[in-house]
Length: 291
Image (cartoon, rainbow, N blue to C red; front, side):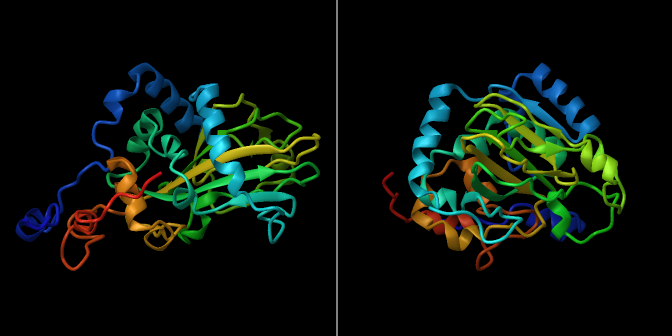
């Protein structure tokens, strides 16, 4: 079998400039153009956009049924994780039921505009905010890439409501427009003015990694379940080490989009190579894992 060579290597060798390839080729063509444009306008203006009813009640029910048996029995390890918040990490290693969020055509169409080609999935996580949880500290997600602001976006995130998000049950809070700030903290007035992302189950909020936001306090008598897929620029380190957390036979069960975003791809000319070749070759002779 011929080896899968590095995309763009010839271009790099001859011109010193790698050719670019979309990691999500064709995704924009499968999303309604008018909805993409409207969502992009809001995302650029506010730093976030609510994509209402992106998933059906049946799809939400399937995701809930897949993740709830894996949830930790107790809350987090520190106030940022949430002492009354349960989290599920390494989701893809446990179930593929949540992959439709990772690769939803509308999400990818927007990310195609946020990032340069070949962007990556940074982590996939389930968050269950229990009654009595306090509001999380305001933060912006790509702050761990220590480059001064204002600067280009290096990360972006989706949060999918697996329960209705309400002002009382821990809906994510955002400060609209804060994605454009420089190196400063929110003022007390700005922090107090953070608004809850109210949306029905099956909806998704997509926001830029420079947007100040936090999980809300849960003052209700029921838990608030959510799924978050986070993404990063192709040259940034991912939060989750997928090469260790997701077994190769499971990777083989994923779609081509998800495989690429897990890191089984090349950012031209040769970022992501394995022994000088394309990482896809690791998957060629592996048996598929049953799911």
